[in-house]
Length: 93
Image (tube, rainbow, N blue to C red; front, side):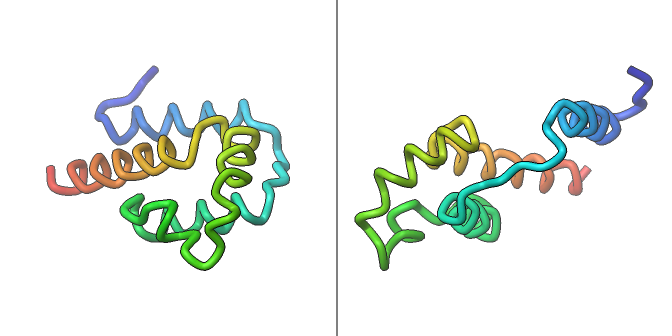
């Protein structure tokens, strides 16, 4: 790995992950809309808030999230918050 700083290392790892992923991924609409809302709020919105108009979908969302993303919505929120904090810190340096 020929990276001179942390940002380049992150870019190298992200590129490696992208190459390992299938080229076209079909994600369920419920999962995609929830993921979009989580990313838009930098992971600060709770699943309850995101699904406030459809609380009966919570269990279905959790199962689909694990199937399509590989982690629960709560864990994904933590990842998004961590990623946002990391980007903030790297931009402050």
